[in-house]
Length: 579
Image: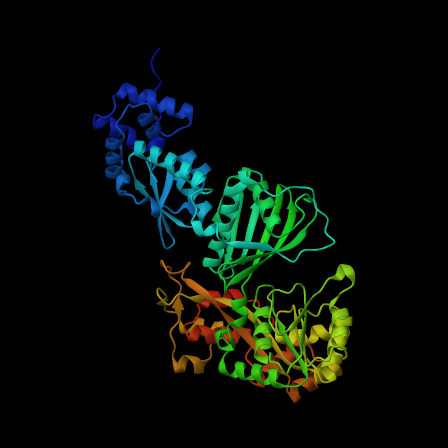
């Protein structure tokens, strides 16, 4: 029976080239094409695995055929391999290994560059632009085994000695809490302990604000929120999900036997005698295990000082003037993660002295401030914001800070306190400063009380700051700039718009964050509109007439100063309701 003619179309001219160069016999090639399809592996992998062709010669031939660079794996520095970009399943399936990363480009070593499905899979998994380099297939297989074996072993072992010296404690002991009867991880789990410690240190070093430990059916993912954007940090083996959740719950003094209900806890990590970092921990039962989210609470962030927050000079002057008033309300609004707490703490630190009695009610207390009486709200035992506020008024306070005004009762007491000689600071969740005032009215506070008690409203966002090392100017048409909100006066003065690039010193062209603010003082004209039950659009129009720029305008000022990009400004202020 004659051997069926194989279809070599899917391989382009590769099979023919191998035969013409004398590397593989015609009959052997026919069989190799059929067998490789039957085994569902690439032709190159089949030829090399069965020692039909020498992998070094095949690599040279493919580099010449496809025009891709030929790379010598012996010259590769293993420390450059971006382990966070390695997905074990994809690497094994396609014999494709990421070997180094430069900006948004990921260089992947492949023995067979015809595997376009491998390139697509890696691009989709990493979100990076993939560039292939051709390598010796034999050496690549050995390197993949070494890298994957090293990542699974060294992930748990051989960590720096300083990890063992970390002093880690949980939150305050609950005297009423019963022993769960489940023991903490023992000696067999020492690698888990070291690994968790390293993850926490990595997050601190990278300036992360949140850590997410996420179990799925066939994967376990750890993500960090850095500069307001979530990024995958690593993927430990899914088999470790239970042990890692148990370790984190032990550290934060949760009940590790309770896996059906959410829990809250706290971890204190002492980096040195003078510096400690707190983590606020929450566990959440999900379909494939417990997800844990850790919020990093760095006391140093509350000591930044007002100059580090990013207020424009006029906005800073309004903020400082409001803090100096003996009574009234100062309200800060914005979404979760917009820096409201840091702004409140900054104001409290400015006011904190031995002559002033300051009390705060928070849910929960994020950062301990010496000299300030801080109360943890606990609704389960009846200690609500309203209950704490009532108690404060019998404690001879000058300044009261509420973590959030959530209901009518709290709002009424806060307004009353502001009208009777107390300085009240608090937050609400609205999109803009004008909406904060209408939100109070919708809660049920009379318009007259709002107009006479509120001194200042600040709406804020946190935008990513352009990396000064790699940002570069970009040309934007004049018409586009005007459409984005820039004025003719802005264009006359002249400014440079910069764009994010990306380098070794930053992430995607950004490094750190900067505050963007809408600071609105309640002037007599604004008070009149409030008392006339004006809506948020009418209040916003008058605010601009009074010279208080909205969030969009403040973002444009940051762009003109070269602090952030148009794309980032658009991302955080594009849906600003007051614009």
